[in-house]
Image 1 (cartoon, helix red, strand yellow):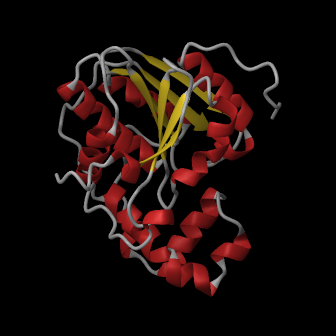
Image 2 (cartoon, helix red, strand yellow; image 1 turned 135 degrees about the horizontal axis):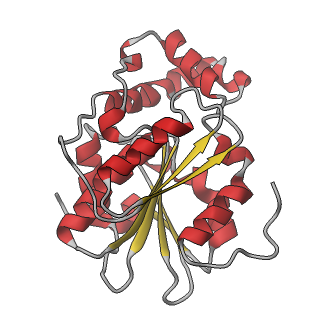
Length: 258
């Protein structure tokens, strides 16, 4: 890895926290970017230092090629993170971001034991339990229909020719990334895992989320919210309330209700 590739400013959008504030690293979903956690930063900073991961191939890194694999992406992210035993961080990954976060967690524990406080995963089956899928090999229309089923993008955008020409190639690349991901058999982490899921997620059920307990030696906690795959958009206040608990903080009294 080159110094340029692992430059924290290139890989992380940092929302500074108070001195000694807990660190929360947020990993986006397929097709998503660091801006998807802007609302989190507004709610949590400065009590929490929020580090939103900037994937290549989108937003202000739009011109860059997408990552070749989940493992390669995790290598770069782990190398860019400010990891230390004195200030362990928490990872939160949604959908594709959950698999990437799991691989980042493995690298943190390998290179800095004690540097990871907890792994939070959302809307994604456990790596070893993900059903086979090959949506990335299907037509543009099929990918759009899959996006429609997850109800995270407006119909006007999905029907736009500009969306299909500009953004669908990157989304297809993300589908390929996650659908070709093959975790090491028996891969585990020591840190505890917290799972988050919507009641009506078409890609993973709350029961299936519990299989994340099979890849950790640190115990599992689980939380289910009403909603679909992108429940965290509608339930942002509730999700952030849960995350503040994970971080060991009292919830802000002025936090808006869902």
